[in-house]
Image 1 (tube, rainbow, N blue to C red):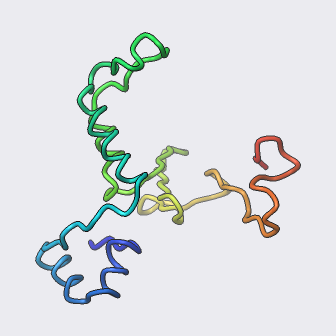
Image 2: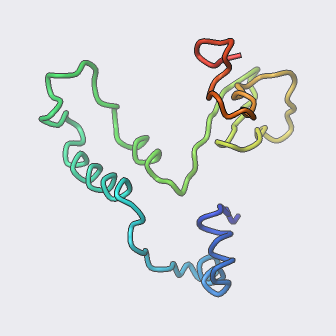
Length: 141
């Protein structure tokens, strides 16, 4: 199975069809270019720093915040891997429904959906005057 996204697949094909073919057929990746922005660069620096403290709180926040670290790092590593994509899984009536962010729901083979069994976001705002539904204090309908 080939997963295409605007950045890794479609833009690569548009910019360099040969690079696209090498990427998906021979697993030859293009070299990583200059990191595009200051926020992205800061993200790498901060992650590298805090990765040194996996399993314990960093000294900057130790004793200053309530709570605890996530048990294990497998889930954290999975979330940080941008190639896997984000998914939401919810069990309803013994059927697994998964919905990729921004995608349509997927239903396990042999099952059907009935009714409104998963959350929906707000309808697009066409006026540009606010980000949420004005009649709802938290933007939920």
